[in-house]
Length: 138
Image 1 (tube, helix red, strand yellow):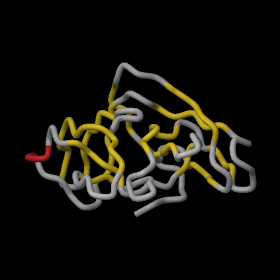
Image 2 (cartoon, rainbow, N blue to C red):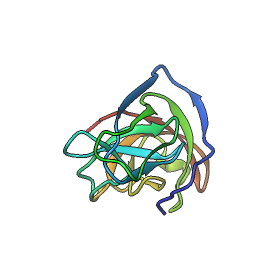
Image 3 (cartoon, rainbow, N blue to C red):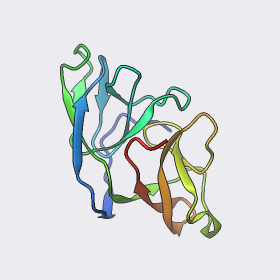
Image 4 (cartoon, one colour):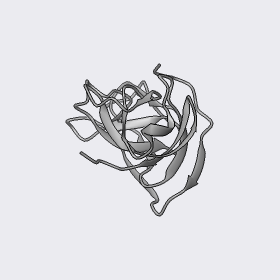
């Protein structure tokens, strides 16, 4: 389920860092949520049925709800490992599978109409997994 609240996330490592980009008009990107790149190059919280590419996980909240395209920038993690929720459930057999976002806080192993996020590296429990995120991957 999409969220409008800041999220507590646990980073477990990775070799990447931070990137940043302009936020789309009318968009608020809460800390710890997934963000995407729309067709105009702006960061958004909308996957658009998988058309918007994954940009990363928001480092610091960016509120452009009252602004025009690009009035605010957002910093986001691009290459790290995070322990993240899978509300639809996962199993040990899902380790190594590609992970997709169906909104800014819902991960799944189902690619249809979703945006690629990375790889499930470790099964933690039935609703949680360690994901190696992959910035702008196809």
